[in-house]
Amino acid sequence: MQEVSVELLTELAPEVNTTNLLLDRVAAGADQPLFRVQREDTWHDVNARDFLRDVKRLATTLINDGLQPGDKVAIVSRTRYEWALAEEAIWFAGGVSVPIYETSSPFQIEWILRDSSARVVFAEDHDLRANVRQAVAQLGEEVRVHIFEGSDRDDKSLIPSAGLHHLLVDPQEVDEQLIESRRSSMKLDDVATMVYTSGTTGRPKGCNMSHSNFAMVAHNLAGHMLDILGDHRPTLMFLPLAHVLARAVQQTCIHGGSIIAHSSSMANLVQDMAAVKPGFLLAVPRVFEKIRTTALASAESSGKAELFLKAEKTAIEVSKIRDARTRGLKTRMPLSLRARHALFNKVLYPKLRGVFGGECGYAISGASALNEDLAHFFRGAGIQLVEGYGLTETTAPATVNQASRTRVGTVGRPIPGTSVRIAEDGEILIKGIGVFSSYHNNPKATAEVFDAEGYFKTGDTGFLDDDGYLKVTGRKKELIVTAGGKNVSPGPLEEMVRAGRIVAQCVLVGEQRPFITAMVTLDREELVLWGKAKGLGKLTLEQAAVHPEVIAEVQSYVNTANLTVSKAESIRKFVVLDEEFTEASGHLTNSLKLKRQRVLDEFDDQIQALYTK
Image (cartoon, rainbow, N blue to C red; front, side, top):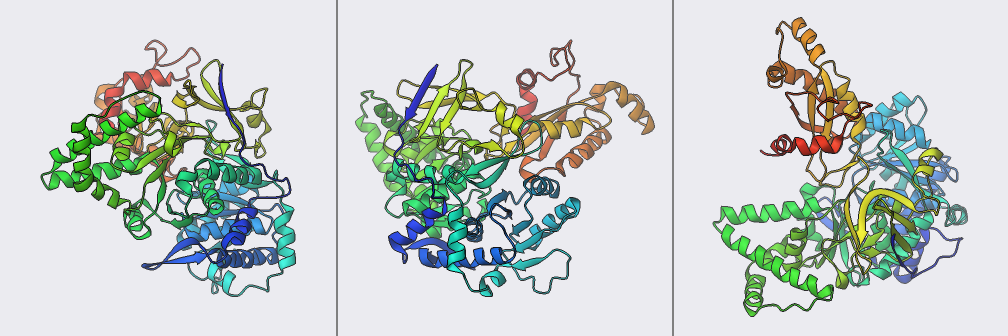
């Protein structure tokens, strides 16, 4: 059994909590910028003192509205400054935050509100408030909804609501003693947030993440990655703050002294990077893939594709030599390679770095696996991609490469205060400061993911090299992780499509792909009956697989299933296969369970066609 542990850098007293990160930041420099906020087309700095002032004002409003210690407050919004403000205020009021992806359907929102007992919600705008109200209608209980954008003074609905501007402009007088009492009532081991993650059983499970998880990770990760996070560098946060990785890094930045800016979408990212000029970036591999392909397309349009490919090859070669050196290998860089690299570093690589704002030396890549050549390309071009690994249940970063000790193709060594063990079957097990305590209201699921020694069973497989660097090799679970880092549980969607009259089997595809697709097989007997009713005659499986009315019928099942999930989880394309999955064909077990990997391997050509334009 392989195992590696990294000693804790910083221990915290049991009476502190995550809010102490902000208080320490104010004490270190109240007038220093903490956030960089975009108002219309202009970016403005918000210093630590002013941010704390608004946090206390909003916390006062929540308390005066009846929020009690331990009460849950949901946030449904894209990544933005107000998201950070709302969560910090929830903590200062003694509450527990419940993040919800802005792409969530009313069906998903209703489940999270019901399971978490959150009866106060911050929604980004009127559109998202409408989704919340649909969920509340299903819930059948009163929920107070506040919005970040706009005013609700004239709102005549039955749901109490107010705009954030109103909450901050017209607050009751801040009672410093009351706020301090509420803020300090939460201890290190108390729950700070409930993060819902998709599981193989379909219903999202609420992970109870403690103040210790966030505060300890912030203190120890900042010290561990001082080369990247130090020197008060600005960063641009565009990953959804509903994702635990974005919030773990945000709290680390508050502690470490970084200036935090937020970008609302991928579409605005390049423009926002040019304005903010981040020193480092937190992103998913899909971002780097898009930047690389966009750069190549630009080169092709100007007749310089060959030059770009030579520059890319040169960057990869240089990075691989550097990587070998970090592994203790004595490698020599040829003079010709050095010369080519120096040339491209004058004429081409600066343009690539300019896409990131011109000041970005590092980018932390997480949420899904990073292509090795892509990592080498960017590092060789002057932007080092630092890959890490973790799950919602580990407050995201359980392992990470350090700037000076990066090994491309691995996800690094454990962060301080963390142990990684490889079980006999290859499963990655984790114990440490980031590991959550339990699933909310689900002791059975909690018991299933911890072994007898208290290690969290990740469901992923991998191995440790001789120096303790982790390499992730696959997933034990069936959970799909798209190229954008979205976790998708295939079971519920497959079951809904399979409930369609003429469908026999549905298999979701999407691991490390840009979107979810599906392969569908037809029920031969039902197809005959359905075809007769439609006046189509007796269709063979071969005929049905390409028949427009059959395709339309299956599309209707897919549309129905898609209503229950967010857009990122929805089925974008599908193919109807002209054969059946049976025990005899080897696609089903004796208990008629799908042999998923067998299907994925055998129908690889059809899968590739789904992702070919």
